[in-house]
Image 1 (tube, rainbow, N blue to C red):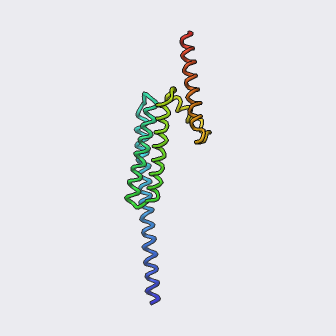
Image 2: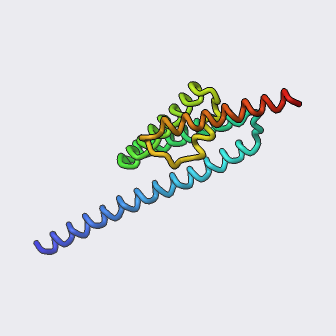
Image 3: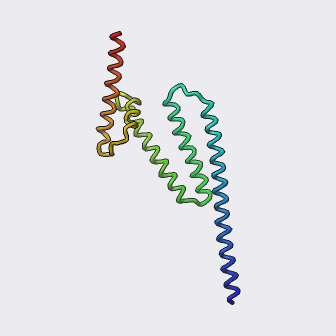
Length: 154
């Protein structure tokens, strides 16, 4: 009886270790795949010359979303629900941030220059976000007006 319990314990422990080993092997395989994909992506990006910076920024954003979707697909396939939830939360946060920047660019007189200035000053909290956007927009508009005045006076 004691030998049977001991054998069952050993068998259960071996099954647990084997399962853990299998999960680690899958994680390593995914990591290798991710590194390989990142290398391909880097090579593609190196070969591309972007005419407009905004197109490059949007392309990189889309690539990051696509990468996260691949990771989400892999994690659901392998039962990694915690990791999957983290990726979904991260992706949603990134999309919300990008949409906010698009709205700022679309509604401000300074456009994407306002967004650039807004992003370069991350000191403000959410409570004074509106004021931060307005200050950034006013600075950009003032710079553009001064640049126009300088060109017309020459």
